[in-house]
Image (cartoon, rainbow, N blue to C red; front, side, top):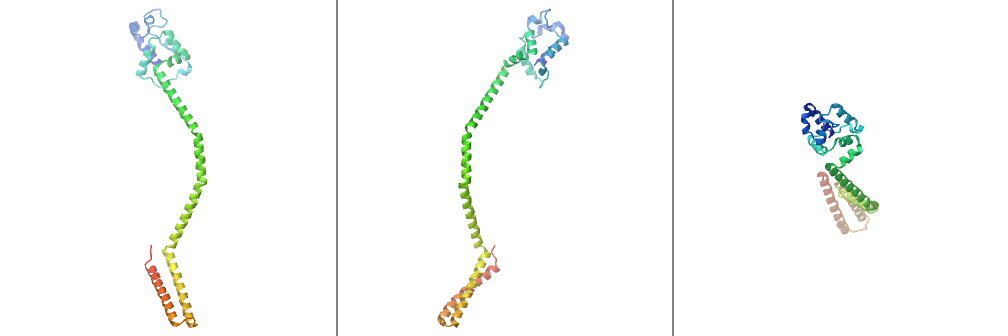
Length: 232
């Protein structure tokens, strides 16, 4: 803002006293030949103003746009020389002037609103902390009780499924069929021995033996088919 004012002064220097009527200084300053600040200030005057600035003001953070510079001129054009010098040398006066600018007021209001909203969100989060703790405890209880029971039941169902799949697998089916054939063969031998020992008559022997052998050969054919045309 002030750099633009200094550059304005330096541009006005070659024109001499003829440009004093166009200066944005007050008429008493611009038109008075005895004024402490001439209409065409020298580099020494500009340097004396710069030397009065606090050390932290000497660093420019970003270039000033023409629109911002024009706004600064509009705010400073009615200031007296003493007031301008005070703004340059007195940090408190500068801050007071800065806080009176409309754009700064708007930014401060926005900052205050954001701060209030942030504090309100923080309070809301703190108010919900007991509820969050309670929900966390409920989750822990569910995980250690209901979840454990459900997991155990799931494991039991998975075990039953594996047993069922194993029981009805082709290998298990042929193994059971072979066991049934062996059992039928043993029963046939028992019936045959009973006939030789006279424990049963010929009619009973034929009826039992025929039934056992028919079952045996049926099982043998099924086993042979399963081995010839494997499933899966």
